[in-house]
Amino acid sequence: MRRAPLAPYPALRLRRLRQAAWTRALVRENVLTPADLIWAMVVHEGEGLAPVASMPGAPRFSVSEAASGAREAERLGIPAIAIFPHIDGAKKDAAGALAADPDGLIARAVKAMKDAAPGVGVMCDVALDPFTDHGHDGVIEAGKVHNDATIERLVEQGLMQAKAGCDILAPSDMMDGRVGALRAALEVEGLPDVMIMSYAAKYASAFYGPYREAIGSGTLGSGGVVNPPDKQTYQMDPANSEEALREIALDIAEGADMVMVKPGLPYLDIVRRVVETFAMPTFAFQVSGEYAMIMAAAANGWIDEERAVMESLGAFKRAGCAGVITYFAAGAARLLGG
Ligand code: PBG
Image (cartoon, rainbow, N blue to C red; front, side, top):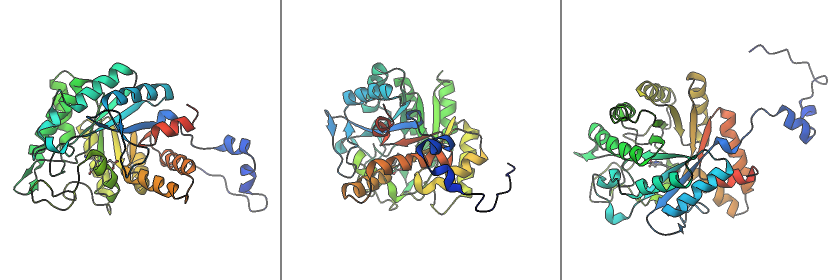
């Protein structure tokens, strides 16, 4: 882009354009709308809404509350909801056997939501961690998360979700090759229209802490299995940026329709690089810890909740995101006038 030379002060006074609301509106570069939001929602087997201590205002939803949520999303103009399961600890095992249960919580939630609001997209997390007793996203063999054995399970899980009516499969496990395996399996099963949004550049982050409470995946290392203390053998090193571009390129080549960077605000530099490098719809996930930080500071009266929420969501748009996955979606859409 060619830029005109800047006139020197006082001919140039950038504050002129900021002097009134109407002129600020006139020159505003980015505008957030409800259509930019994907509502992150944890679902549970129980009744009603179950509060999550570290995520005030973002409780777990029962299947019927999730269906009401889908109707609410439709009313508010939120295009899609991403669901994540909270599973009873007693139902978990080392292999995450229930991840592909066609009568399980996720299948029931997807069906109820699509029945309630067929025009709202439903996105499912493809990952084993809600279902494994050790909390890892994969099958453990010889003390390691086994890539290829995990992919087989992820394909079963993804196909179950697609058959239940899920519109977007969102693999969040960070195994190598899982997008290609899912895409190939969808073709074979006659489900070519199911979309894939890959958690392509997902970092081993401290900001997922409250989510582990929300889905009940607890402390890694439980379940009698000796594990690495965290997910660093499969999620990315927060120090890396070039590697994110390689991850994104691979997932696009394997058949991802949309790509995601996660977490959100601390990684907007990655979002920007991805947007500028690939002509792909790029999303970011404002994760549980980001949500919790805003809510905790607001609860203490240290920041203004509404302004902090809207400013943070606007930052994703400014960075170039097509949309944001966020626990704030419904509240933000209401603030936007819904
Ligand atoms: C797991 C998964 C995680 C999140 C979404 N899917 C956590 C993790 O990788 O440990 C995080 C969501 C959040 O923190 O809001 N596959």
